[in-house]
Image (cartoon, rainbow, N blue to C red; front, side):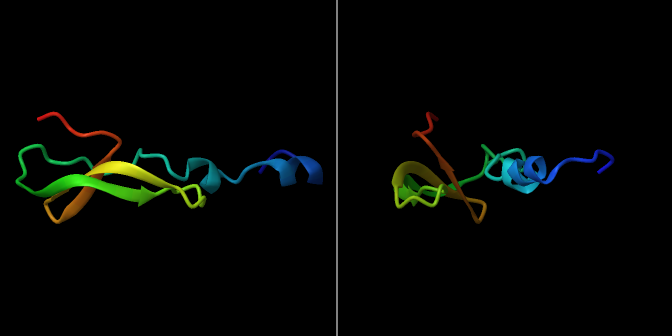
Length: 74
């Protein structure tokens, strides 16, 4: 970059890829008119790397599996 930084400052900065990991800006949206093949509660392993399992509401439709923190009201 155009700025000259010392080694300490550069080493402590988080790379841009790591900072945007896990954000849902590029996530697909479910078509509300599509037929739901299956839906129900499942457990998903936490993305933090910790062996933690979180209960999520899963919906299978359009050959895609979507999940949410809570059950959808429809």
